[in-house]
Length: 303
Image (cartoon, rainbow, N blue to C red; front, top):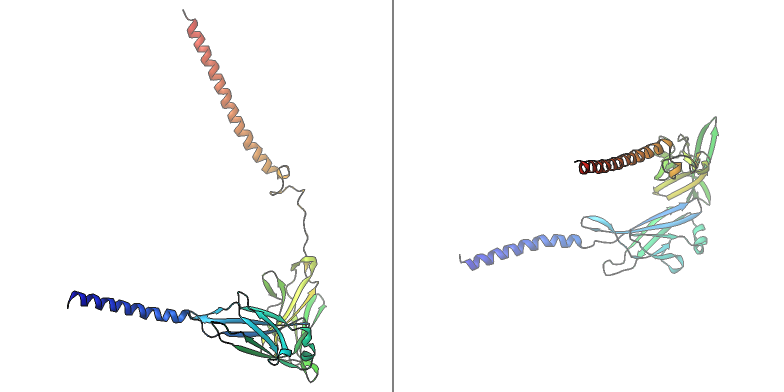
């Protein structure tokens, strides 16, 4: 085989390998279909809002999609039912409150459907998603009997123009802390009984809090029928935080003359030792100079 043919064969083989490796990567880097996820929230039985999330699958995993224009509607895609228009943030999220203009439509039915429609762009075609929920609420009560503190939560759904108990609803009951929510007892979740009620004992005693006020949180997360129900209430079951004033006390972080006695003694002892050594050396140098002058005079006066 001639050298030129061998070179052409090798070049063709390398080009084929490069093309074979490049095609899957190009396919992985191409965005897939746009996914829209809708979540409904009811906060303290008063504030209703919808959280929309957009994402797409790239490189084998889902990635958030930012700056996607969305129109969210109540019950049907119509101008009169428009909740609002919004663009997603860097996390692919957007939040919309249900406006007061839709209050009559909201009160007219026990269940509602939320619909989100995206605006088509160069990457994604127009996409829609929906979620249906039944209106529900949480009622909270706290009791203290013989130093035993208990919390009773009741879940009601709107049915036949009245609030009826909602059984088999999984609830999380806890206290809001800096890192999240701390469960009030040993159980992570509680399930309502046939009367829509659940009672849990408050076992997290002696929790420090500002003025002794704790924030109790009861929520139902991503329930298939009711969405996300969140209820918060302030309770005086914490231990007040006592702010101590150490400004005029001897502490390590105080000013120089308010430092601890032992620290001042150590610092001044070291300083005295250093200066004492330096003074001793200076005195020895002076003595040496005087001794040198005396020896020189004695040698000069010798016959």
